Amino acid sequence: MAKQALQKTLLTDPYAVNGLKKELAYLLKLDEGRLLAGFYQNSALGTNGRSMYAGGWEGALIGGHTMGHYLTALSQAAVNAGTPERDRIAIREKLSRIVGELAACQSACDGAHGAKEGFLWGALRRDDANVEFQFDNVEQGRTNIVTEAWVPWYTMHKILAGLLDAYTLAGNGQALSVAAKLGDWVCNRVFVWSEKVRASVLAVEYGGMNDALYNLYAATGEEKYADAAHLFDEESLFALIAAEGENYLDGRHANTTIPKVIGALNRYLTLHGKTLHGKRVNASRYLEVAEKFWACVIGRHTYVTGGNSEWEHFGADYVLDAERTNCNCETCNTYNMLKLSRMLFTITKERKYLDYYEGTYYNAIWSSQNPETGMTTYFQPMASGYFKVYSSEEGSFWCCTGSGMESFTKLNDSIFYEEDGTIYVALDLASEYKGERASLAMRADLERSDEAVITVTAGAAVLRLRRPAW
Image 1 (tube, helix red, strand yellow):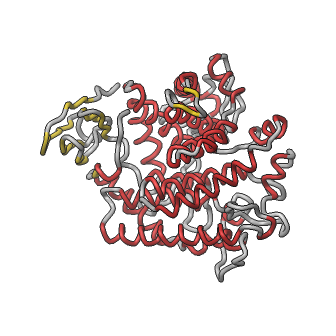
Image 2: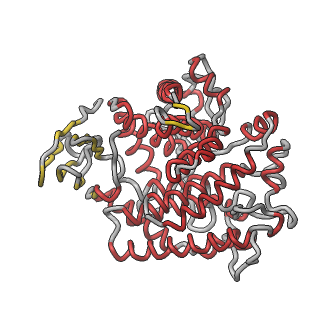
Image 3: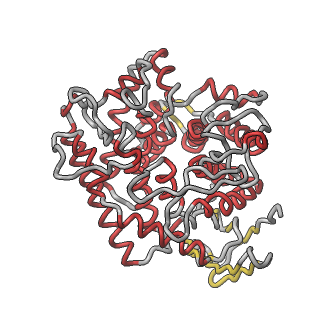
């Protein structure tokens, strides 16, 4: 499978360099103590003298989701070739402190406010005797986002994914220990679900819990995590996708649906052809589901910029022009469709995934950041007469604020791919690459010229150059 590495690619395009610079400044400015405040309060540590960011989503039942994104963004920044060394040191120190504090919170959470062993949580607590109340409520179909439950499994996915990135990218071993204990808590909870309870849970946004748990299995080899991941594989949805019927996405919450398919594809990546519980796994169906879903979203639901959705939801097939408003193209959806495209390319090597990636990367990711402030968008309007609204430093903490942190610390992650002595040049963007077999330098400025010049500066490798759709 073709691989790409943040530490091997240095972006030199001035716009991209500025994007990383602004994001690094924001990450370093945020007070990790205030992002940790909810985790302190949900453990026996109490407030630990810190107050949470009260503005935007962090002061509500979805609080703590930003910490997951923040961990991922810090981990990516720690290994990004474009991060200045001074910032890299500060980021690694910050990341180490956070993981250490989360470990302390997890230890102090056991038994506190009714928490089970391994639980780790940063959202507002409305029941002092039951900090896990949101998970209980979802299982029982109670989902008022103000008083009962605001997508707790979505938030848990972000926390678990951030811890795993701290381990797999930044090499923080303590993060894997915390993630494994949290994974044990997940297993203990989900393995007792009845089919009725499971259906209730899967009816509420749960992010990419399957994706994160498959990654935890890959990091540890513990088969129970793969079993838990499979309980989040929504087979009824996958059957609809495989059937390729008309309008099967109509009315579905887009950023709920896309991560489910990413998780399905991760089942293929992680388990296909491997042995689980003594049996060989055939996960080819999950690759087929991902390919068909991608084709449906791109062919029937995607605007020219590469974004999709209106007020966070898919509409009927090909309804795009009739649904141009001030709330099209949720940026999280774009982030997730690019993730899905990247994964599909590494498996299939099909050019169409890179063609989509290129246009969307420029038109929907680069444009999601205010280049002067570093703040990012939630929606990107497709109707005439509207303007983009950017987050604020402390008053938003939307889902797209978090995915924005991630996007602008990994702008360099999909320019080059390498496999078995072959380097795939995916994007024509000013950059440098130090690969296993060869080092390259690319000069390109597609705003002003259709010419890209690639110089092999050392070594030898087979180069595969994408012939762009344009």
